[in-house]
Length: 524
Image (tube, rainbow, N blue to C red):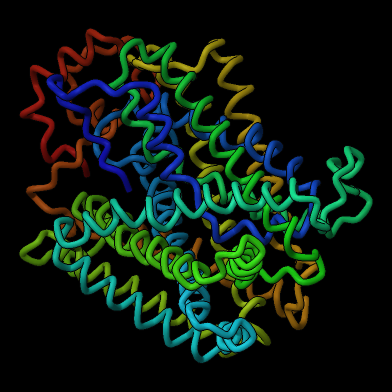
């Protein structure tokens, strides 16, 4: 989780363009494009729909929450202010779990990329479909990434920085340019380019199921919301940055998806292989087939660099929550590089168990799909809580200073967060329905696995919270107490409300600043 500490006053100001690029890089991933290429031209509708009902609401809501409650904790802080620590712990645990489930699917794409570095595409495709090869690569690379992460940020920061450019931005540009060059050359394409195909056939319910995963394509925009305070005139410039980032993200997704659809027939699309096959085919069409293996290596670098970065991120966020008293001292252990090694080992164990599903499910593609859907489900639970918290806090703490506020008062918040909540809820429900486009074995088994795993992941944080002990709290924690805790522990706090949660004003925050030394250790 991103550090929610407020930026220093001397920090350099961000430009609108810089923040827009930061958001694009944080959100865009190419590995999911084949899933939407299944829909041909109608994928344009799904991308735009998800942007309106998810991407934009997430961005705006996260900006208000991040600036209104800039203390450490992120989504744990926001949900805790609204609904208390048990629900906050659920939200934080969903983020941690979602990332843990996401690792095998992301590394599957990396394994497939590595399989395509050979000169024989037929042999490469067979290798990429081999469950034991995929499992071996996933486990080897993940555990290697964990060991690297143990050495701290400096050990992998350069890999992460350049990996994003080499493995995501440059391949996306190449795919789009060559794909549309292929279209303009007069070669036969495998998408019917008629406006009538943009609107999906909603009479076929199966068309909606696989598209539910598109919401996760846009997940992550909230991670950079804290930087809104580093903009000049944030009230006006932040929406512009979000608009630029949203348009850029949607354009990359739409054009990249169509480029794959131009080259590969819908019936031949494979969720784990088709991006690499598209590069192979289009490079050979352009007479530069020798670059196909190089592109496969680039994509693998991008995936692996992202994995190394994300191994440490959510684990560090969970460590902050743990030291605030929500996990036993065992999970608060850090090495000399201040990395949460015990939490990271546990995460590696989860990734290992989930990865073994590759040898249980009937195909790599089926396992890829079920883990991808579980990732969506867990992440959407967190987003549902975030949207609900934003609406609640507009009522419970209306006078809290917010450097960025969603326009329109309570009505504006209801519309923006309400759209995001409803869109997330619909995607959440659809995520449990087996897609008709993919051979997943028994549909009943597919649904049961998803339901059981979801129940397990949701129950775990509540069980942990119910078992917490006072000695779990680290005396040196820098996690600031919640507003409602301050009301209990600081009876001298100027209070303008008789409700449980004080309606704080700037006067309250000035008082708290003067008495901040007394707030340490206030959390129960």
